[in-house]
Image 1: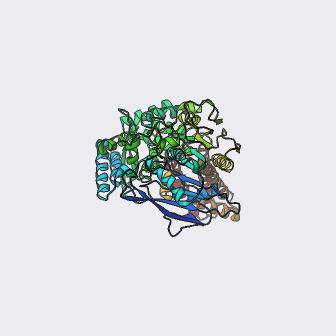
Image 2: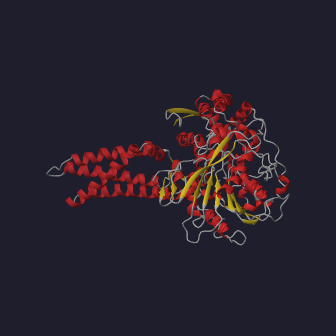
Image 3: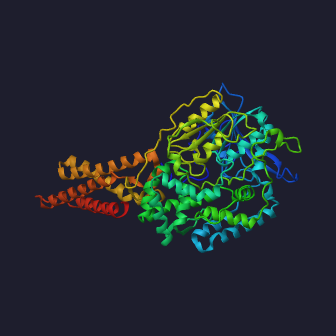
Length: 634
């Protein structure tokens, strides 16, 4: 079982669906009964001409009690893909069709607005920090030029157009109504789709809701500070940042585009940025206090999984699409920020200099008031200048002030959002690092008939939190009966143990072993020799050798059991360390080697003299293991 390290980007990969196959027309593995296709639409509905193809998948439910209204899901981002979750969602909604729709310009749409020039420039900023955001802007300009040569008009890649794609897909597929499901950035898309197509929506799920009025870029630094304060390590976090700003760490990692190793030079601000991304994962949230404390103490080896995660994150999005949406819909930046994600986006948007998207209303207009000249409802009446989801902020400290709750969000609402007339479920993670309950709960209160549910100990994208099934149970219950559902589980019960500073034995060895399994050879050899000692000593009546083998196997067995227990509950924690009890088991190994020494001495003094080479092998292997254990593993 592979250790899932500190960060999984865009969206976590779910458990595979049963009976998965690759359909002929599908670019990803999908369950039986799934077809894939393209929705062909104008690149710019305000200037018809060139068309684009939006990828989608439809899984037809095989359930005999199949419900008529499907669930349509779009990934977040912007620029996260959706199709790879088709199987996962078909398990969540077995009695309904499931539709997953890509964003135009995304990974499984045509054209695909990938920007390797921008990605490589972002990596260069870690190689050579002196290049700064200016280097990223240069890479983005090169990308835009290449896309323009292919005929791409970036003005067609906005939230307004993405919303219209959702509405058009329902009409193409012929479903009278369906249930909208958005996460993070796509919650904004789904809210606008509900307003644009009120007769075609039965209910709506908004996971990690991105509210209309949140000034994300300007809140990002504040949100990160609030998150670490909520985790109880504010001072240690600031000490960590100061330490690596004074003396940046040199961290080996791999270029995800070229597949070549390089050394990243990570300052304290760089580490803060990557941690802000990593805190999306509930598993990382649980271990973050111990991780931050260890980094503040100079345990630089723990930066390797963080640096490796950067590359994975940069290849999980199509940055041409991402920046097209950001720079037209969301580009309000602070004067300065410690987070390189913010400064990178600011540099790209200034270099591209795209015109802002047309005003989209105030967010409280009715569908009739948002009609376009074509007679269709305008899908972009958002009234929002909210910075879009980049999964880089962190939750405010006060999200943990009260118990996670289920709330009829409409109660006590301020200005109401008009045009949304269906039941709405809004889910929020207690430690959501991008859309914290601080902002998503009040925003939910402005949606008529919405229910807000907060989940303890969870980060971003509640339905993908593998540590707990409560979020998925809640969604399933809501979709089954949106107007009369009840909470099927206890959202205030955190599923994962929190690791406080000092509660773990901090070591980067497990992550290194995952990358290079041969590094575990000393442990394997020690276990094999101990087994031979136990069996051979028992058969020949040599008590010291047998006890040496028994003690050695006990040390290995208890260590494996302890590590496996952590692996099955929170495997991400193994990128930070192992249970503190493992240190004690090392002393059992010392006892085993001591017994091996005694057995060798007894063999030398025995009359007649016994063969020494088995004892010498045991001593060499045991001694080597102790060096490996105390000098490297621990």
